Length: 317
Image 1 (tube, rainbow, N blue to C red):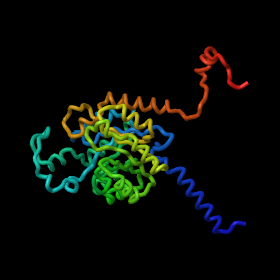
Image 2 (cartoon, rainbow, N blue to C red):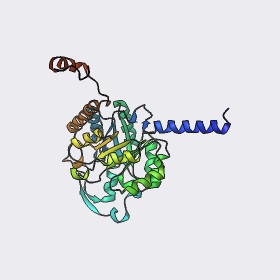
Image 3 (cartoon, rainbow, N blue to C red):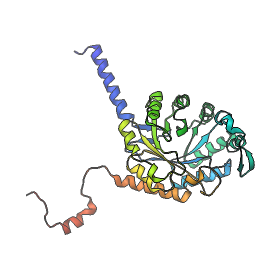
Image 4 (cartoon, one colour):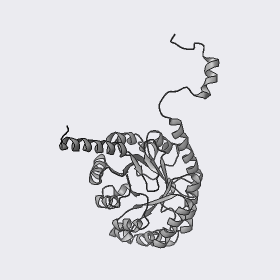
């Protein structure tokens, strides 16, 4: 008869096994899943490409829905916490005239009423929305809307206090790894743990040339964290490389989204327009179907050609 210690140890091993079996799958509160053997979770990052216009944001949401995206993402900052003192009074030309960088940052920030309208609009359209939060106050702000998940920008990977703040909400967290060393990635993961985590490979160039995309890092991260969903946040100008990221294992895909790449704004040039987003989503879904299950079989559609063209029926008697 097993001792209590042996039974407890067996239960502990069973719990660990179950955790290992389920860590590679994240379930959002609406039932959608991010992980192996699931369709890639495709995000149209509106970011600040709305240029402070709620009407423009709604048009982008509409086009993301039409394209078949799973979610749209915004960026939320508290300017007085995020803008360095030496940059605040630097003047720049904007669509609203010449103003300081601090004035510009406030101009493109949505407030509570704006996000309340965005929240209601996304629910009406049946698409998820969430945000990259750049400071702890921004997390408290966005948490009031109970988002399905959070994402940290690549610039925030070394801000462990911010990562922990987002993780403390109990929501899944996606961390981007652009402009970061391997040591910075492993330090961030060690600081916040692997539970409810998606790690997104990224290169923080806008736009990013193909030779610097380094998509094989997706496989490297899979090898390092085999029980954690790995994603891709792309800043290139084309579509094929993002589709390729899914083909080699990305479970989460994010691209900046705009109505017109010629619009004013720092992220517009590296963004995808509505027609491109629709094609990208379609190609990703085609690739997911084409990947299959890796088990060789003779399809019914092959039987006619098999019967007509095969001279030797079998190599075995």
